[in-house]
Image (tube, rainbow, N blue to C red):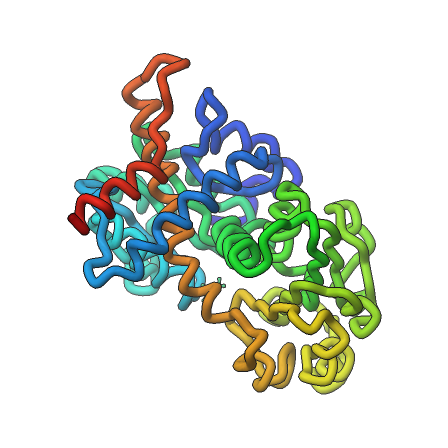
Length: 360
Ligand code: CP
């Protein structure tokens, strides 16, 4: 797929909303957080909470996606997202296909659409897609059959909605009410699909203050339009911070020299032990990964008592289980044309019932 084959993020937003929701306003694809109602995000967080129980049992399975086939289509590298999606699908009892794009027929010139058509011919029910082009997941969702759900696992600089939801899950578990919190996001905001999705989620969930921090080259003025305060002085921004989220410098997306040196960046924007003392004493440290120690974060902070970086990864499985089960459930409901007004399936309740019956 080429960049010209897909729409730009700004044009995509409302179209993605129409595409990702059923007529009843429920998620059938998960393409973007922007524009979603708070109840949709809360539903994901509450459902993920029930799956934490599944993941801590010796038999980590529930049958919510039994008989379904999930295809992981990663056109960009990934460690956390791809593996936690695979684990999430398996723990929901789905069959999982991991398409290694580098050894697939894509390398022989097969188009993305032909790859999709072939996977649909194998009766795949869900595509989890990562692609370097913004809008790739949206593009795929416009071309799939009605029984297929598409989950965006990161598209270019646009959106990484499941990462943002697992981050919200980690924040809520550690800090409770979003309204009471000051959240500081530091680093390469310009290129970060994670930051964009986090900012949308935090605003929808009613966070007290969201501060974006970085050098002017990586934090342009228009980021203010997303609903954040802008800061170029990290030390100043850290005052009263409850949550500090570091971001990776995305050098692969920098087309011109936007940084002087990594040493200079670390001096101004590295999260060091000394700097962390400027935040609230109980502040938590987060990072979506991969981390660059000594560039964005001091190793002792990444591994320190205030870091919840690995807890984010663990919660990512439960959060992705929640998103997959909710989306697939809504696709099934819309396929079966259940009349409006029918009491909704509560996946949280369903999952809990499964866990209890397993334990009995
Ligand atoms: N956070 C994140 O997306 O990491 P991966 O690139 O390893 O999936």
